[in-house]
Length: 79
Ligand code: SF4
Ligand code: SF4
Image (cartoon, rainbow, N blue to C red; front, side):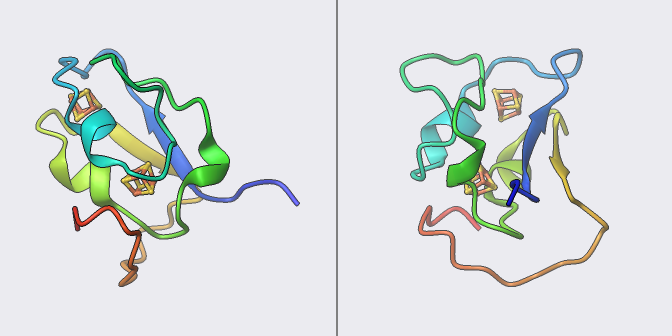
């Protein structure tokens, strides 16, 4: 089954602050860089908006996002 929820970065808006990379503890983003690269979308927790909530540039959208707000425990301590 293909993954239904994972982050997509709008690089035109992204200021490469690294907040999303630093905060996600589920291994979605490549580490040790400030440029977000979602190398492991399978690690993303369905409905989590942890990195989107932190992004100062509104540069993160999700595949599968229909606007629904879920309460999820992603383990990132970033919601
Ligand atoms: S912080 Fe949450 S939404 Fe962002 S990549 Fe990690 S698990 Fe997915
Ligand atoms: S938090 Fe937003 S602006 Fe910062 S690196 Fe991630 S996508 Fe880019």
